[in-house]
Image 1 (cartoon, rainbow, N blue to C red):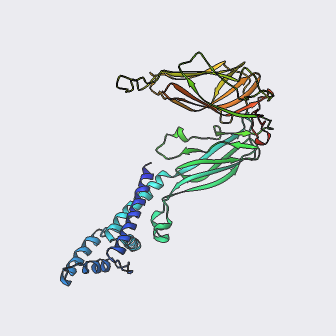
Image 2 (cartoon, rainbow, N blue to C red):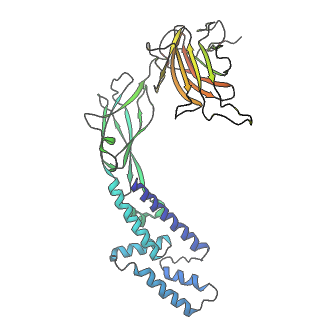
Image 3 (spheres, one colour):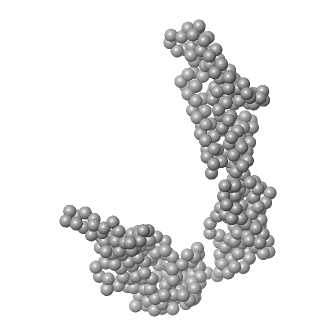
Amino acid sequence: MKARNVFIAGCVLVLASLSMWIFNIFIIDHTNDSNNVQKTYAESVKKLPGNTDQQLSGLQKDTSKKELSGLDNRTPKSTQKIEKLASMLGVSIAQADNYWDGLREAESEAKIANVEIEFYGKVVDQSGDPVPGAKVSFSVYVNNENLVSQLLTLGYGNVAPAESKVTEVQTDEQGLFSVSGVRGEHATVENIEKLGYLFHSRKSYQYSRNRPESFRQTTVESPAVFVMWKQDETEALIKSKYRGGLDTQKTNEPVIVHFVRFPNNPGYNEEGDFRITAYDQGRGRDERNRPIRRTYDWWVDIEAVDGGIIRTEDVWLYKAPTEGYKKSLRIEGNSSDPDWDLSIRDMKIYFKSHGNYGSAKLDINAEANGKVGVYMRDVLINPTGSTNLEYDPMKEIKIKYK
């Protein structure tokens, strides 16, 4: 982090120099002869009212001493580079001297932050079987260790404090891959691709020396494991949703949810698929209509009719489990909980109802106005009793509405 902060500071200095350059052009009538900083300064001062040639001569002399004194301890080669930097940025020698110190410090920090990277990974499918022949896109964040030379050669507009270098490797027959022979601060597995497989999201690994070794350690014996979903044959599924507000004053009267709402449709059952009840204590109001409670108790019970529910953290809700279901799921906010919230977002579940497996995502909102909002979305049901929930919109079973 220290290295990155130094780089950012370097960029700020360069931007500041750009602002000074614009100021010189439009405010002080900076001449095109940027190789002569003293001449530019003299011409600018000469235009100010009340300045005589004698006064101007004195200003030139004093400024020259002030600007050049800081270079006394520089080597001739460094002095030439600082003068070139001043000319390039349109700033004084003294300012360029300060920028030079910042850039050299940033280079030193970059060399510390960049370390040798050896990364070992393994790609498997949802069953734990290796995935051979997968293409892995691997990027390394590299801090610029040659800021000064690039700046003087390419110009500040073409120099970045860091860059991301991307390489691609393939997994072997055991699903293994490795990357070595590169230097950088951190590495990221950007993507993994193979026909018939899905990959969820990128993952980064910090290699900076100020991180503990265990944070970044991957070895041949203990590679980082990445899971892909091996796609199966899709089946015809019902896709549905439910959105409703439950009256919390009638907790003994559950709401019956039919995802397949009408008879004569696959999967329909007159008993419904779910029963939902809710309770919301609310904030309460005093005689001045001010809230009494900052937090309050609320809960929602969701019962799968003739089946059960499982809460899950699965990335892909494509294969329902056959065991582990409970008759109902309670989602609640306890007023004494330090992490209390009046809403829940993106809770994922599998369910079984009337012998049919399905999946859904839940959003709950205890609105504190006498109702609790329940939104069940991305609901998928396989009406054949199969646990396969891989969705293909071309095979979706369309509900016949009366």
